[in-house]
Image (cartoon, rainbow, N blue to C red; front, side, top):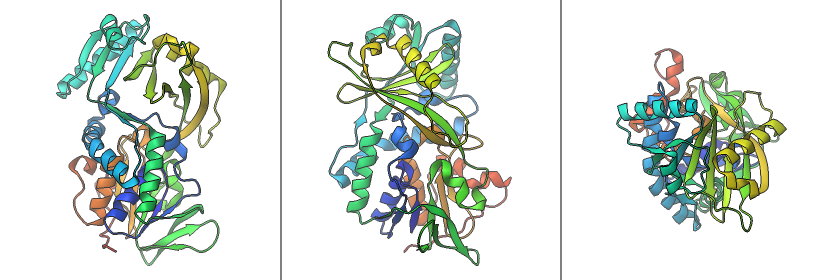
Length: 381
């Protein structure tokens, strides 16, 4: 089996497949890079919820429930921590328009029987003293999690290596096929990698790897900042802080050692990963409105990544013709969150078993206008 893509989805799926007895090769010239490296690490499906995306909410809620066991298993396999945090999330609003949007979100979640607590700005500051006076209202979501994405990626690579997975550092040009079946991976240099099953997990670059993926995945640029508290500066929040600042979304995710990841912009600019002055300015301005103490923090890093967007914001997980071709891509801003359930779904597909119920909505067959899924059975190797 070959897995194209060494980000969080590819590594998670490869590790699960190897643990089930598959011989796995991960094809990626730079594993644990791209959007996975740049991510904030929020595991917050409830605060990401929006009317019309109930399938995505159900998928995220099921995945976050699997996160503690997934994190423990990866940590045990790797012999190193993954940086999981269980401190919860707060959502903050500044102006009246932001408060109205927050009220609409709370009402939507109540209709879906998802419990959140509405708070005044003062009550929010009692929970998180780092939040400033410009915040007038908020929500508390105590069951949301977060993870240090870079610790997670390091642990997944170690776990993969210990499970016997091989890494091929060549660039994949596409999926090789013959007579309607997958035969391997075409590479930019050297011979093809032979494989009876190929799993495409190449994020924003997935659409170029097989014609059946054309138009299903596109790059969505996001810029982030990494900050560190300096001596004498106000302590960072303990919980993840999401916020609306004059209609602009912002998040701040704490890291061990007084670090803070601030994000994220969103723009559809093709495969451009240039960090812009405007993007950095906007993130710092909005972060300071919500968490005034960050003005005294050190700015350690600015970076941009390409989220893999899909036409309906749901990922694309399932079998896709020709026989032996599987895909797990299009996770947009939810790749870290959806890693456990995606890995479980791919493991089920490889065993020719039903995927978890919430994953059915992510089947690529939805883009064939109700036709039968083009994928076929794959046999255990």
